[in-house]
Length: 89
Image (tube, rainbow, N blue to C red; front, side, top):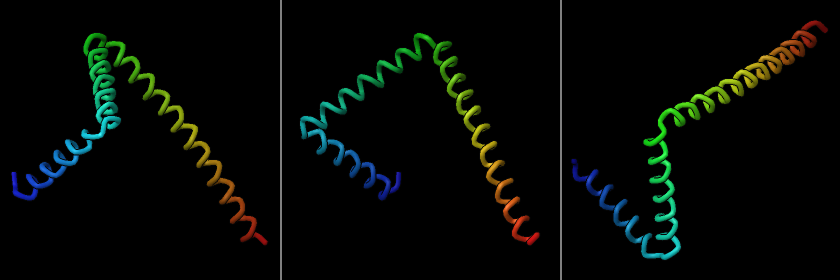
């Protein structure tokens, strides 16, 4: 590791440790860590459910992307119509 990289890591760790001095920040880190651990256990214990959820999310994204592309096509057609109307006058 280069010296500047060590400095960045040291600075980040120092900042993290100093932020833990505040009680509410420390509690927030603990809560988030517990949630992450719980989710990781869930994924590990039920991988097929996790894959199913991921597929559903990806499907939703694809459907929404298709709708978005259709809307962009409509906007493009409207713009082309307006340009043709102005050029035709």
